[in-house]
Amino acid sequence: MTRLIKLIILIILSSSVYFIYNITKESKTYILNLGDGLCEGINSYGIKEYGYSDYYLMRKTNKNISLKKHCSKEMSIDKMINLIKTNSQIKKDLMESHHLIINLGYNDLFYRTSITENMNIYKMNYIVNNTINDYNDLITEIKKYYDNKILIIGYYKSKNSYLNYGIKQLNNYLKSNKSIIYLDTYYLLSDYQKYFSNPNSYYPNNKGYMKIATKITKKLEK
Image (cartoon, rainbow, N blue to C red; front, side):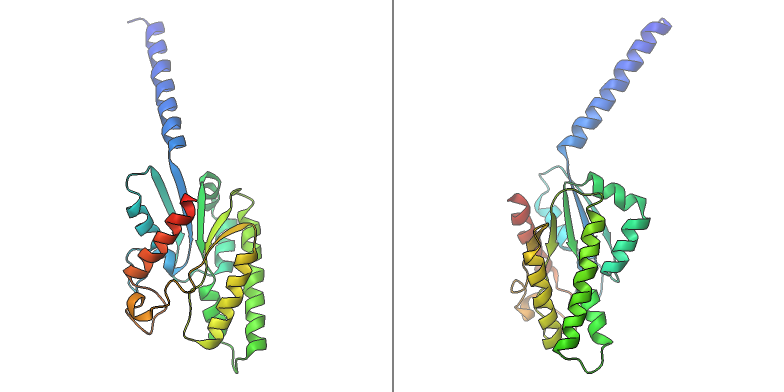
């Protein structure tokens, strides 16, 4: 076999591989999840299992879906902002993704509420405003790399009255933000006995995660 024929065959094979790769890449749906313990799949007893993104993927096994996650139980909004600024892989994932799902802010609310003495509505409003400002900064940072609308999971009901007040305010902010798709969970998991196996934890059980995954499916299909 002459060198010319070998070269032609090599070019044809390389072109074929490149073509097949791009066809496969284009046919896939890339979904990126950013978030805290809910994204990671922490259950009611603090053990990492399946989160809403995993259950969503299970429901879509017949689809060509690529799922990526950057999640941590301790993740806050400002930590995520810093992560995006400093982590080249997250930047790449944001640019490649067709859908972006975020759940963040509960840790921020919970922590800020827990360290505030003599809590009242005025102090809670201050906490909420700071959290909203952080969220605005996060969306601004994300938009540098991701052009589509962001699906953000809202906050479900809390038994703590002040925390629940803050949750309502943040949910209202998310609902009114035109740059995002808001997923309402406030009443979705209101049956504590059914969806929270441990009454001392704000992480749901597998039924709760599946409930959120079902709602995500409906949102994305729209």
